[in-house]
Image (cartoon, rainbow, N blue to C red; front, side, top):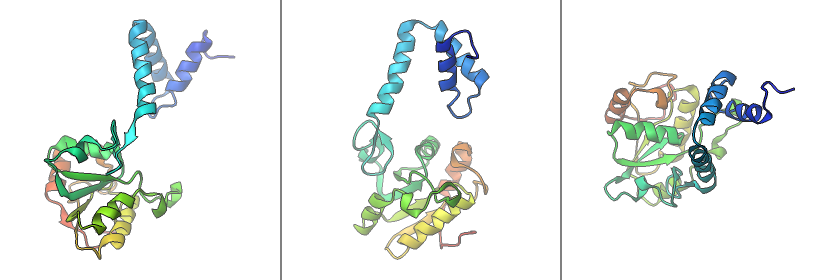
Length: 206
């Protein structure tokens, strides 16, 4: 038996409720909103989601999501190519870009080390980063991971992996409190943490 009078409505609500932070009531409200819109507008919305899933790429330089093989950040000649900010996900790239306090490049790991979630060092996307460092293209690597135990463990792993190369390894200043996710830090705090970044010496507890 379906929860609603329409099987189509029931299926649409079920799919929307799979999204993070969306419960059944919110899902119903979103579906009913779409039903009130013109068919053309709803079609455009649906097609944009399908195109996103089918056509999105990962930048071959930094692993950021992109419309092309090289993302706009990596392709921008005005960015400082000697500085690479290492982040967990695209959300963190967006958060840091919003501060307008950083002009280097990024490297997106695609996750952080978390044994509880089955994520180990081998699951991180570090290949291109390692290649750039070995080539001497990177002068500074900024570790901009969440200040959680998992983030600190990943910082320590990356430090051990790269500290013997001729690069400076730095970390965000402690304006971002322990346990914070970067995407929830306000832009001013995050911006100051980038500007006031400190050398990282491999102390997992900082």
